[in-house]
Length: 78
Image 1: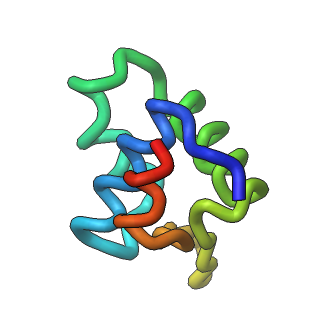
Image 2: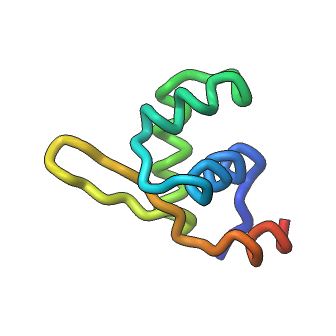
């Protein structure tokens, strides 16, 4: 597993606290922490799925995300 970047770690923290969440839910919570647009949130989520950090679940037109990695080992490696 690759180590998460700082923004990826912020997303993982949100998913560890509550999962699953949609990209919009995550973006709305991150808006004050990471000053970037919704498209950047979506692209980061795509990269995190590719890295195996999170899991994408599609339900009709709704995509939701859950953490794929455990909190303690990930934070210890960071």
